[in-house]
Amino acid sequence: MQRSPLSTFLLSGLCALPMAASPAQANDFPTADRVLYVQECMRAHPGPQFEMINKCSCALDALATSVKYKDYVTMSTITKAMSIGGERGGAIRDVPSLEPQAKRYRELQAKAEKGCFITPEGK
Image (cartoon, rainbow, N blue to C red; front, top):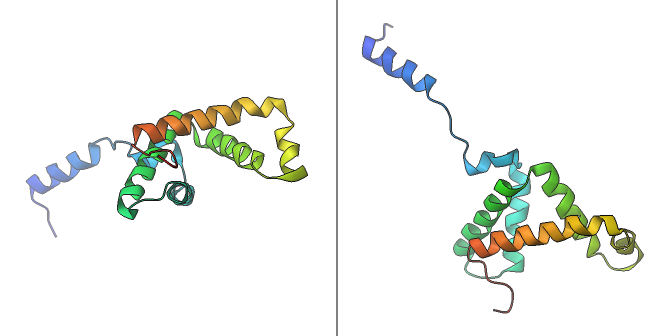
């Protein structure tokens, strides 16, 4: 099958266009981690499902533009581990060098939630 010169020209032009990075590709956050973040956010901030899916997705996209995925994993893991009660959580809470990372994560998360109109619990 022979292509017309116009279709060949259009096809070659499309192939040459640069692909813009979409929010889903920002800092290569895996889809599963994006879903888990949105689900956790929705549990922490109950509201209309469609609205909260969009707001929580917005918050993760904001986080993804502020921090690399590797750093996000480290900071979120530290923050979650610090919330574990008893000795297991104390092993993390008692390490002063980890507190700045947890604080930065909480600040980034609060900024992202504010920017995406997610209200704190009870307000």
